[in-house]
Image (cartoon, rainbow, N blue to C red; front, side):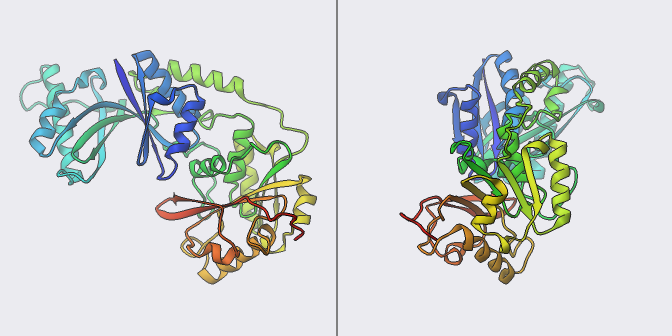
Length: 407
């Protein structure tokens, strides 16, 4: 029997998540990419369980991992009810345990989410009541103390897919960032930015540097990648409590991930972050320690307007730098004029007078500012639309350099 395992993603990140699945050993033919999700198809119950554990523990850029329980067409509530109650719910919901239903609808005749929730819930209750031979009108017992299964439906173009959530908390919650800092970037987006910027492919001669590091998310995610630390290694997942998947396979994958960690960092640190806010740096250092990568990352308090290529090289000791950042902007932290001053300051030491990356610099910036290229003084070599929360942004990449650049 084939199983579809669905990894949901932020829009614009889907191809990165698909590449991660291939890195985990899955063939491209098993993977299907669509807006906001990547579907992995595997054969057999054991492979499904193993894949669910692997994706939860290892995927850096996915938001959640779900298992498809059923899929069918429905344009009215009667059809939704009949098709939903036909599914073998007794295989998935332990007797007496609780289950919640949530979901979304796009481009479909069925668009009232509360009504869809009630209809699917009613269908499941009817099915299980018949299985357990409950008297007509008797209430189906549900107790969270016996377990809780979170079900999600997605209705797209009148196609209903019902899924079970194996993640619990979103996968961006790695467990290292209990301290809150103003307007942090999501961990999954930070990891995607690093992959899209080809972090690590330039070798030991290139350091990665975030001049607006805030709570340290981008440098910490870089350190987790460099140390081969699985992002889900230190947290738990709802699939462990769900007997259909179970704790055993999660324990197996977690042990394999633990063995893969590189415990000793290189002699010279290659990952750096700075921020003008001394309090933010303390938070970043605490978060790095919580993530177990404090020896991989260097932090310091630094005004981006005071940075020069020479001072950066003096600090990092590296001839090449991937400067990657999520600068403050008007919708998030600052007024638009102040944000533009920061953008200009960043560009002054990363972009040359010809509008190209300065010698020894590769620049990747995510921002909703549509005029960033005008402020920077040059067109980006590559652009990619991404979402930081609900804010539509563009990631700008500058990697081409002016020949014989002396600036």
